[in-house]
Image (cartoon, rainbow, N blue to C red; front, side, top):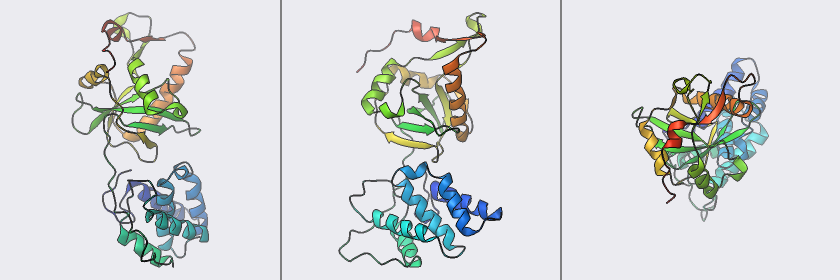
Length: 286
C-alpha cells in the first residue's frame, strides 16, 4: 500500500475504495447498494488488519460525501478508528493521521477517546519493496495466491524496476521465512524447450522485471529480510521477462502457472532446467 499524505484519501487502498463506490453510483446504484457492492469487491482485502479497517474507514468517508453511511459502515469505521488508537494493535503501517481520524469520528457521531487513552498512531508511509520481502500475489481468477520474493532492484532495467521471483514449488500455507529461504536455495530457472535446438529455448520461467511498486490490492507482504542467495542476486544484472505494467503481473503469473502445470498438451515443448544454470555450480548456503 502506497501513501502520500495522512488524509483520508491519501493512500492507494482508500482511493480504490472511494473510486469503486463512486463508480457504482455513476452507474445508477444508490448509496446503500453501492456500499454493499464495494464490500463484496474488497472481501479478500478485508481478511486482514489493518486493511479491513482502512476499507471501512474509507467507505464511511466516501458515503458521508453522499449523505449518511450505512449503520454497519458507521459502526465498523468507528471500531477501526478505535483500533488505531490501541497501542497493541500490532501494525506499523497505518495511513491515517490523527486529525483525519478525529474529524471522521466527529462526523460519524462517535465519542472522543478517553483522556487516558493512548494517542492515535502517527501515520506511517508504506515502505518500498526491499530485497528479501516475501509477498502473496492474488491471481485474477478464483482468488488463488502464489508466493513471490523481491530479489532486489533490477540492475538490467534501471531505476524503478524490481526483480520478482515466483516460488512455484511453495504454497502460501507453507510460506514461513525458513521455508522461503530453503526454497530460494533450491530454486532454478526453467525454460521451454521447443525441440529445435538450444538457440530456440523459450524465455526463463519464474523471474520477472516489474516496474515498482506492485499493486496494493493484489499484493500482500507476509515477511521481510529473507536472505537472497548470491547466485540469484548475481542475476539482477541479467534482463528477465519484462512486465511494463505492475497490474499485469498477476495475469502473467496465472498464465505461467497454468502452463507450468499442464506443459504442452500437444508435446510442442517441455520444461527443462536452464542449461546455463546447470553448468554454473551453485554457491553454498550461507
